[in-house]
Image (cartoon, rainbow, N blue to C red; front, side, top):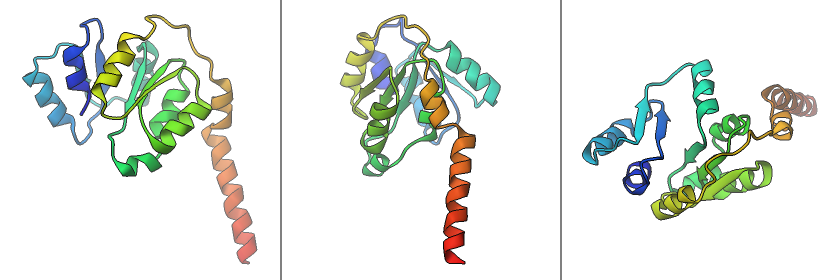
Length: 163
């Protein structure tokens, strides 16, 4: 909903690489053709190793949730994937996801979902080069093994109360 229109107005020095096969991919590809955009590349889904390669070679990692009330109550796993990478994040989110990012991740640039003009202004004012970001505290706090252990203990505690 936002990338093709924003890319029409952004300087050609910005390139968006979109990886995956989401439900709106066909619509996105149709808009890319319609607007004759050369600064968007859509790539088929890739394995985890290749995905991390793309993340590490990006200047910024982009996340956008549409402006739906339901999306104000979700926390996409993509936030954790991106948070583990040494790259700045551009996110168009509201609600809980926005609050989570503000409270837990540094070097994130936020804009209002589906607000093309806000996104364009944000991108045009980003620093061109940034040093690698160390998010060791975030990674340690939200490591999957730690969360799984905590969840398992919670289940066991609740089972013992029921017995």
